[in-house]
Length: 150
Image (cartoon, rainbow, N blue to C red):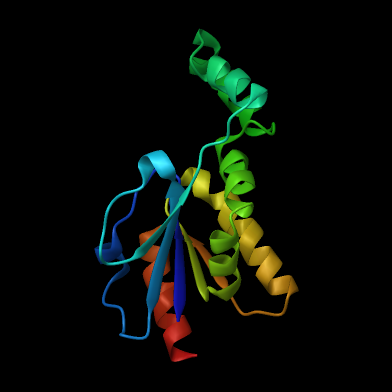
C-alpha cells in the first residue's frame, strides 16, 4: 500500500502514523528548502517557484499587511495562497504526480497541504481509484488501518 504524506513545510513524523506493515511504502512531498533527511521514507523535494509572481507574493508576505487577519484571509482566496502555490509547483513534478496516482492514502500534514491532497484525491477518484485523503496524523492512522483491511 502506498501512502503519500503532503507536508510543504517539512512537518514529517513517520512514527505518528503508527506501525506500518512491510508492504507499506511511505513517500513525502515538501518544498526543497524544507526537505528533511530521513531513511524511513522517500522524500520528494519540490523546487520553489521563481519569477515576478513569486517576488510579489514574498513582498506581500513581508509587509505589515500580511499581519492583518483580514488581509491574510483575503490572500487565501487568491492564487497566491500557499496551498495552491505548493500544489501548482508539485503537480509539475513527474515523480510527485506518479506517487499521487498510486497512493491509497494521502495525508495532509499541515494546513497548506490540504489543497494539494484534495486535488490529487479528486483526480484519483475520477480515474476510478480508491483513495482516502485525510488531514492530520490521527486521521491518517485510521485511514491506513481501514485501507489495510480492505
